[in-house]
Image (cartoon, rainbow, N blue to C red; front, side):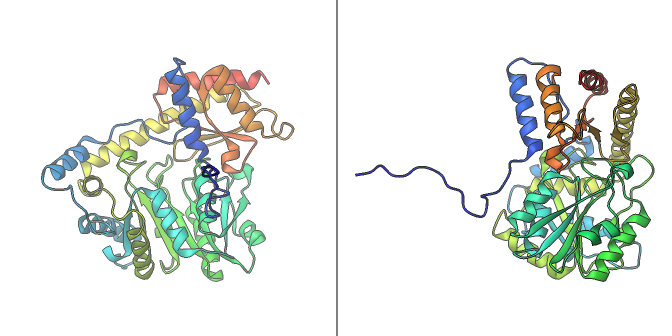
Length: 400
């Protein structure tokens, strides 16, 4: 008798799925640290701050008073009400956003996937301003749709315009995924730029998914939300969460805001995948949105520290005139062109490997964001480590 075949052949659902490059870099850095290497990890997009104490205290109170059971699939009424209330104030058009338009998920990543899976399918094309977060392309592919990369202008922070989107559109285009502030470049779209993009999408009947997870982390005044400019939310999905602005990455709370019929569909889909987000995490997220000034002070202080780190990093990188860096206006990333760009194949990966193996600095190759001549550097760590890492990057760049 022949032995059973124990080899694994993936289904067509995941046959072309790629591992998250950002997670892979972080895991490699941790492995090297475990070997005794003193690695400065600038790969993961995670604030190094603790969750503000008032939020932790509120969550502990909720845990002690029964926040240990299932909640509604779409999230607790308390959290959805808090999200809807904040959204209504932000919208500022006399339009009341209701809890029925909100679906709470296990992080904004799941919220994005829910939206993609419920909106797109075989034969659809989705325009993705590029470079963009690596998971956008995979989420669209998992939805059996086709991701269409639209490369932005590197001389303008890699922004895309209505003209560049139109140049890549076809009769199969069904949607576009926007992100501001942008991961990986730190670019922030202005109100007029967002208005032009949303107007074009509305005129063409496209869905727009707006990822605003970094919206609170902007350095030149408040960043514009799609909520500020969208004429209607009928074909717009807002994705947000508490991970970045409130230093709550491990709590895994994100959400969508959309028209109620789509929200109902996404909740039904989620009911068959993950069901509800953790009850105690939802309590913490509700506290983050409702406790007011004590939490807001902590958020503003964190954003100011990111600004200080950005300025320190940019000052050191400016010591090498040949180095090209996208000036970050928000989030906590630097997008740096690698030496050999244009002549060395996948120059970003080559440079990232040298930084890690020779200079003990972990960064993400730009290939993860479909920009292979670049690297992404997260300055979401102690300022002394940021400065040390920037000096090492300059040294490595000069070794080219």
